[in-house]
Length: 171
Image 1: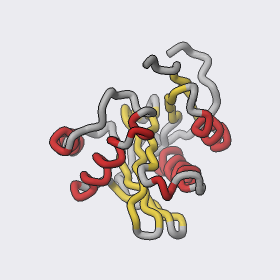
Image 2: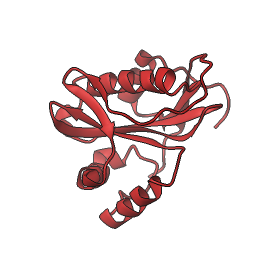
Image 3: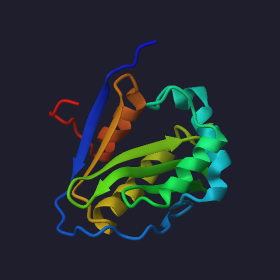
Image 4: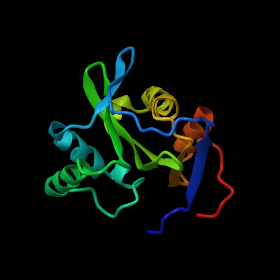
């Protein structure tokens, strides 16, 4: 099967700070974002292997536990990634993060709601709002970009509602 085209969507804020902040838990009532930890490996691998999630990722197959462990070990040596677990009412339900982070150019957003019970209830919207506030205000990033498959209408509606716009530059 062929992939649908990806839609690049930036969100811009003009902020003067260029210092990346330390990763700390972010709170909003019964929803919080906490840094990804080694003990999250089984959740992340299970979520990324679900067919409905995998179909929206830019990879052919979900990671194995060993692949995830290698990725997580390498993550500790990087300064251009920020990774959080989305926790609702004490239960991990997804992940959100930025890759390619730089104070000058911002970063690329990823979000995954892995637990089916958390989908369609506003969890992604709340997590995005909390995380983007941190990216712009806490980290001082000037831009957050994302890409997603054009046929993912729910994602398109969500990202536009949050404030993302079409990027006129070609991918």
